Length: 350
Image 1 (cartoon, helix red, strand yellow):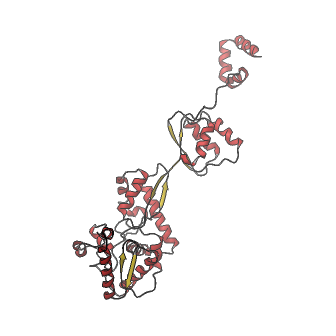
Image 2 (tube, helix red, strand yellow):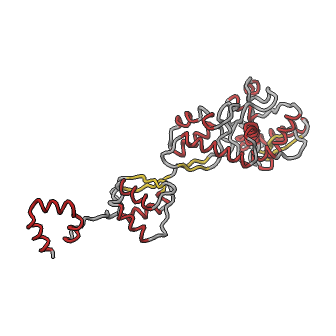
Image 3 (cartoon, one colour):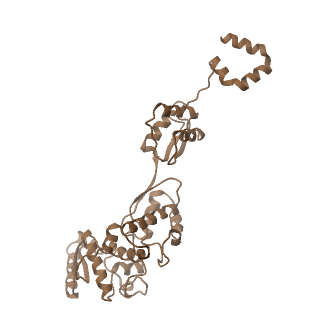
């Protein structure tokens, strides 16, 4: 048979050979046993390739992408594996593979969650906006300057005009982002999540700013879950009676102070819209990122006659709530005594 084909090719001359080869190369190769390989061997040549599987893509789409990026030698080599096992399902995302992988190695890599590339960051409740974007930058590797630019215009994200900045609108949670997304994409995700939580809690759009302002105060002032609802009641009682809030958390925020139980004299006397020792009513906007409990506490304050509170054990968060100034001063004295009790306690009170 092979001899017959060879003689045939000789007999038709060079022009004929060229015509037959050009138009019937696969058939000739099959007859002569000269088929080209359609698959690489091994697990790659060491050159990394990021392959993204989009939601809704089918196996043929994945096979095409792998071949086009040089991961697999051919579409067929990978696609035949999928045809042989209809239970194979891909999870959308971006995966770390290599050039020149065998089809089986590429398939194994795509099915291994360890190869899925994700950017992640955990945002804790009570962080200020500057701390939030620092955590995002550390988690994603995107430059802090990019996040600073992304939060410079809060109106891009649907934040109300009354908000002086993006503070309080970045919901605290753990986030994962796909490679290739931007700082602006991430900020939008956090803001959208905050709006989603407010909507789920039944907060009207027009009430978002006030609710977040109160929730941020509660988040910064309360330590224990039950106390969130008591601090909320103190806020409502003071506002209802026309009292100044006199919260150190807002006063320190306005003065740019952090990390101390006690506000400085300069902070207490500063003229700014966050100094609740000077202004009456709420500060101009939130002072930190509140979580679900703080938002719920705004909507459901505890019943009680309290106008004062003070944390008397900074290690455990134990807080005393009072109705009169005399009761409150006794609580403050209790805190000062706790601070003096040991070097460990003094470290909390610095």
